[in-house]
Each structure stands twice: as C-alpha cells, then as structure tokens.
Length: 241
Image (cartoon, rainbow, N blue to C red; front, top):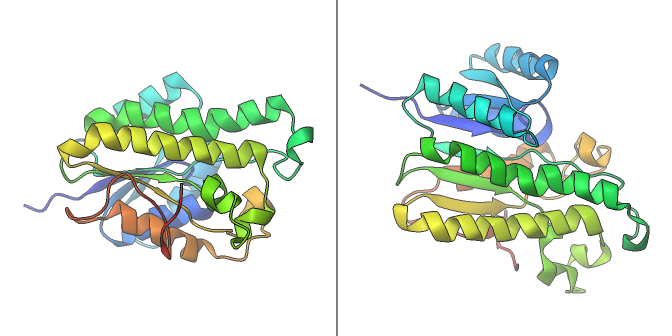
C-alpha cells in the first residue's frame, strides 16, 4: 500500500507559501496550508482543491503557543506522521527605514513571526517528523547573509534592513542549531533564500515570481539521503553566512 507523504507549510494562503504548497501537492504530498486567517486559508484550500490537489487549511498562528499546539494535534490526529515542514510565514514592518530610525516595537513584532515563530512551530511538530527521511526548510532571505552585506560586489551590499535582515540572520543560526541536533537522526534542515520576489511583503516590487522563488524551497524539501544538512542556499548554490 502506498502512503501519501504529508507536508505542513506555514503562511501558505498566499505568495511564496501558497506556491510552495501547490508545488508539493502536485508532487503527491497531502499539504496542510498553515494560515492564521480562516477566510484566506479556506479560500486558498478551495482554489487549490479546484486544481485537483490534496490540500487542507490548518489554523496556525505562529506567534501563539496554543494555536501552534492545536495545529500539531490536528495533524497528528490524521497520522501517521509528517514528512516535510516548511517554515515560510514571515513579515516585514517599515523595513526600509534606516537602522537609526527603525522602531523597536516593529523589530520585536518582526522577530515574533520570523524568529520565534519557526522555533515554536519546529518544536511543536518535531515529534511528528519521521526520521530519517523528514525535511525541514526555513525560508530565509539573502538579506540575512552578513557575508553578502559586507561584500560590495553583491546586491545585498546596498541593502541595510535592520529588523527584517537581522531576523533572517537569526533564523539562519536557528537552522544550524536544529540541524546540529537532528542531523544524526537523518532529518535534514536547511535555509532557503528565495530572492527578491513580488509579494505583498514588499508591495510587489520584487523582480522574481513566486514560481521562481519556490524552486529552492522545493529542492531542499525533497532532498535525497545524500543531500546537504545545515546549509543556506539560493538558486545558485550555497550562500555565505
């Protein structure tokens, strides 16, 4: 008997998250569409189901312990386990202000979603992730690369996003920490940088499509046993931390 693989994608009702969910579903995964807004989550579910895809909205607010615990319980009840977890949910608040003008309240709110959210979700769903084949992808950003920020030969050198960028730097460190712990079990955890993508996060100013952005995430979510662990990648390969 063939068992359908299962994936959870946070922030999956729109943008890159929705495309990641769609791609995984087209590959035969049952995909849980993590979203905090019921209306948007169910609308995304209906749209993707209309394409013949096996998806289901999952009430999931990554900043709330109770919501994340309830979501993990819902997925566990469906059994038998979880094969892929994509921590995609993210926000950027007044991110283009210079560091000297960014508000601490905005930075705290950004960290609640972009940093503490992935920790909370990963810890909650970890008991469901079946070693050794499970994969976790942290959706990071090239703005999280300190190496690129200091390299005048890269596009990131001209970008100085204190709140958002540093939250992704922290997420990269979180990726490595989980990967170091779980790597011996065979579970692979990597960070993906989708590139500057046209989404509502940046007012649709990005030059990449969500289809292009999803590629590196899908690659890392479906790694073979000999694939990398504790890495940070975009479409061109490894990125400097």
